[in-house]
Image (cartoon, rainbow, N blue to C red; front, side, top):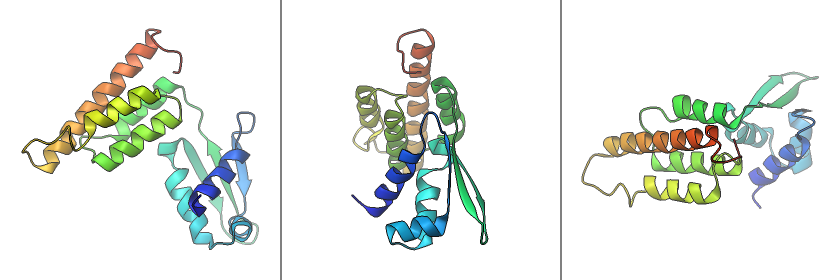
Length: 162
């Protein structure tokens, strides 16, 4: 397991359903993992962002801390946020794959649905002779349409995960 994965896992085990917030000291965490504080910053920035459903608060200095708060949203709210804010008018294949992985990990999209979504936005599916900018726009529209369909099915009672 990579160091970043270990740090992420450690922090996530501290955040529970009953306690959706945790306060940490960056230097103590870096010392525990035997790494530079910048490695902790990297994990926080890449794995505990608002896109991942977290808010980070920090205070620098001797008594400084990092507070990580898990934002509790319903599945439908999360899907709407992602559709309206994160995807935008265009999305690259790596960004789309990361987003789909997060949706599966959070239980907003079933594993089988995620696999179908990944196939639909893959380079192979988009192998038509058009510029990459158009492929990314087409990928974004396809992904938004799939997410809206999932949200609509969940709202109509077709699934219980949202």
